[in-house]
Length: 377
Image (tube, rainbow, N blue to C red; front, side, top):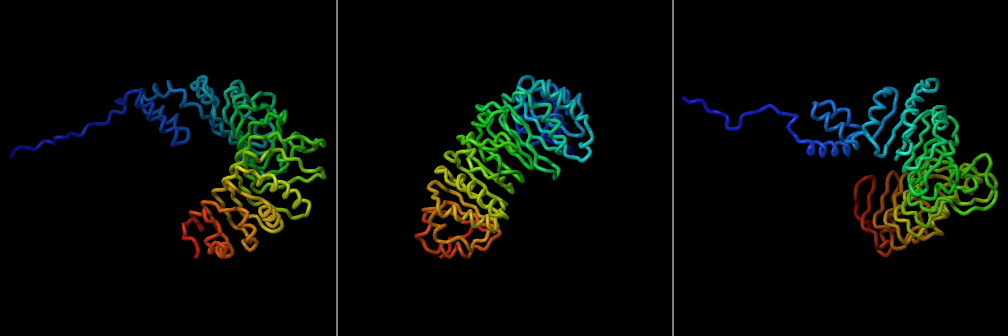
């Protein structure tokens, strides 16, 4: 009996077979889907390595941590050629309070500061100050995004001054720390501001350049281009001066207010000024309120009652007491948002009002604890 032969004989996969152009497309996909794949793809075969080394965009994301060798860091910077750099520095281990070799990595990066497109820095308070002292004289002319996270629980510190290019700098995220710019006008182009476990002093023009020495004279807002504002577990810093908003709400489209507290009346008043500015923008399309209780919630609801939201499309409420949501609150949102998101709360007071079809006729979708539900009848 003749032996049948496999019409499709199995062949070994030749990893060197894809042409360079195909590999560049694959590498570009990996950049979008995975964190720093460059070292891996450069170690597959000689062909892959040659393609990877000749693709500068593969080497523009730089990670500095406890195990990043300086020689490797220099190689990565060299391979990125003249492209913008996205830098992630994470030195949050306790040992970095006493370990200073990381400064060599900063010194390697500093000559390329004009290429820094984004900087994300997570470190203990002493390390943040050490790095700030090394870069504060540099002009961050290409920086679009800055994230500073203090990883220990020490006192919130002001870091600066920073020199931004106002036509370029757009996104600022601060967690357990604060910054100040060399000049308040350098924040004029900022569109996204997120303050987490921080201080709301940055929202007051009096304190924008110095918390210790606030400017007493009235000043116009410096941050006039804000579209996204996130205030999460950040406290106001009342000082007796009249509140002078450091931001304009005229372009705000997205506002998140979360975990804000006011245990004393002076803090209630300070929060009311922040709420009264942040919620009055005519362009607001998405409002999220989460985990606000007590005096802070009552003040927030009072501001909402006195405000109108003509452009709002999404309203999200999480873990708040809905007993204070009355007819005046519902009326403040006019025809209603298109999407209403509720989580970890008692929906009954709100649903009782939504049973009237004349209330929020524009409402299209209701979500409760992650599931879409029908409108109450």
